[in-house]
Amino acid sequence: MLKIRHEKQEDYTIVENVIRQAFYNVYMPGCYEHYLTHVMRHHEDFIPELDFVMELDGQIIGNIMYTKAKLVDENNHEKDILTFGPVSILPAYQKQGYGHQLMEYSFQQATLLGYDTIVILGNPRVYLPLGFQSSHKYNICLEMENSLLPCL
Image 1 (cartoon, one colour):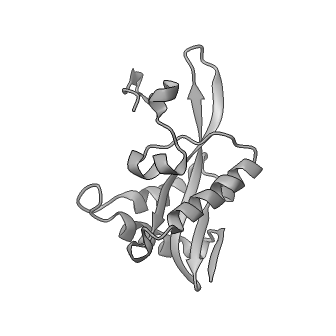
Image 2 (tube, one colour):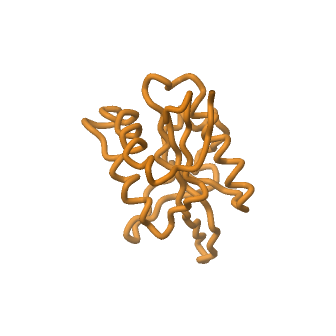
């Protein structure tokens, strides 16, 4: 039986282990995403209402969590948006649609909370088929320490 629910404090270690297994040696030797999750839970922009785990037959096999972010245009107009990550599924359950189900569920919940925009950094091969569009199309770029990174 598949179930998506909010993460509880007693899930933290399990979820961090799921994340570690999902990302280990994928983008670099080792990984840091599980530590990022640990830090994010205590950040002021973390949204507990959008912190979900996916269980299959009572075992946590995946998670997704969100933080608040902002888009700022050249006139300094701000738009509140969301960003998510990490989103992870245990390797044994990857490429079976579980990640997509978890994201779709979280998108619906974000909409119910009044959010209408999600911007992420991620692999285009993964996210474009899910309806995400390139930030370049909207001239969205990252600003890091007052210098702009190219639009992707």
